[in-house]
Each structure stands twice: as C-alpha cells, then as structure tokens.
Length: 43
Image 1 (cartoon, rainbow, N blue to C red):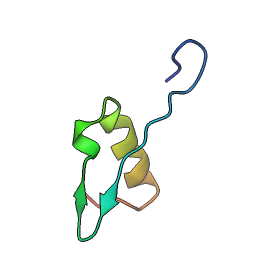
Image 2: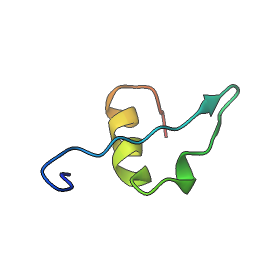
Image 3: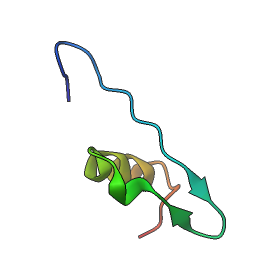
C-alpha cells in the first residue's frame, strides 16, 4: 500500500508471551498477514 508514493512505516511491539499492541495500529490487517506469511504469527 502506497501513501503519497511511499510505503508507510508502522512500528509496533510484541512482548512475550503473546501480547501485542498491533490491533491498535492503522495497518494491522496488512502487518498481521505479513507476520503470518513469515511464520511469526501462527493464528
């Protein structure tokens, strides 16, 4: 997804044992899909 011709940067935290503030981020669905693809997020 491009915004003004650039890819947006999003920072989020993952803290063990499975706690994340990702659901509060604007592009959470895109990030979640990427993490699943990279085998970082399992469900």
